[in-house]
Every structure is written in C-alpha cells, then in structure tokens.
Image (cartoon, rainbow, N blue to C red; front, side, top):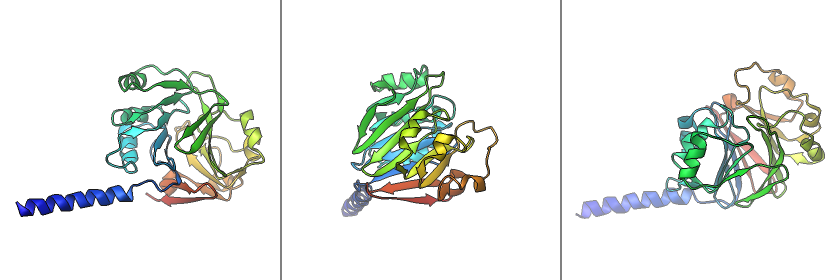
Length: 261
C-alpha cells in the first residue's frame, strides 16, 4: 500500500512539474510548423492558443500542435483560415477532432466536414472582412485584405505592442493594403516560397526577417533562388531547412529560433 502511495505521489509530482514548465510566460510565441502546407500556431501572452491554417494532413498538424499545447488543454482561442484550399484547410479537420475553438474565422463560406465539425462543437463561424481587428489573449489580429474568390484569401497582421508579424500566405500579390505598411518595420513576414518576390508593394516593406511557407501552389516550381531572396530581409528561413521557425516577443523586440529537422 505504501509503495502505491509513493508511486502516486511521484506521478503527481511529475505532472505538477510538467504543468509548471508549460505555464504562460507573458510573451508572444509564433511557430511556423514544418508540415506539408501552411500552419502557424500562436501562443498569446495569456497562454491561449490560436491556429492559422492547418496544412494538407490532419494527423501531421495535430501531432505538431500537440507538442506545444499543455496535455490538459483541449480548447483554442480561435482557428483562422487564410485560404480554403488543400494547402490550408484539411489539417484543421484533425484539430477539430481533438480541440474546441472558441471561434472560427474564414474568408469565404466553407461547406463539408469543416463546417459540420464546428457545428457539432457549437463554435461560431465568422467571415473575415478588411479592417476587422480582434483581441486574442493580449495580441491584436488585424485583417488587411480579403480576396472573395472561390477559395478566398486573407492577409493578416499580428501586433504585440511594437512587434508586427505579417501573414501573407492567403492574399493575392500586389495587395494595396500593404502600401500602408511601407514605413513600418515588420519583424517577420510569412510568405509563400512559390510566389514572386518582385511585387512592388512587397519590396517597399521594411522587413527584418522572412519565413517562407510551403503551402501556396506547392507543386509549382519556385521563381527565385535563395540568394535572390536575400534582397528582401537580412534573415531568411524555410521549414525544410530550419524546421520549426519560432518567434518570441515581449512586445518590445522579437527573437527567432529554429529547430532543424
């Protein structure tokens, strides 16, 4: 009996230690996950999580997200789609089978299993509109542009005090919404590897780092070499080379670390 009691106490101590390690640290964490397609996991300063897109494979993204969420947590602050194509949406199905988001955002109406799962979870679905702003656990998510085409497409800006992360995985090239950002420093741009980097609105941005996503038209050849892309920013990252690309910010400055595969 005493041995069982010691085992229970030891196991409880291990769980308490893990919970202590996973407590909120008051900082913003943005992780570009190394999966097929696009998926960004955001941990807000209050410890809540938001998933933007989800990649091609439901199991793949669920495994990656499970590495960061505390083992007891089964809720997300939000899930967001920038596009509703095969590079962004399917992975969210795996997430919705394991977690319950408080709200879901999409640039266009989505039918099928994604919507059915959200209805079962009684999660409200909201359409993204240009100019919208949302508070997600102490950070601001701003919708800069939305393409109303068949698969939609949204350009998003995450702001944490003086730090800005621009997510351009779902919008069309040449979005005029980027013009307003020309004089503002962007700590990280998330941008598709297959897209052109010679868009005037893009080249005018003051970028500190670029993380290339793999989702948009993933089966098409890239238009530029890695060397040519160095004109964009001092620091360039790609999941196939760097693994998890992890931005951490206290709101004044941002640092980026990687976990090579």
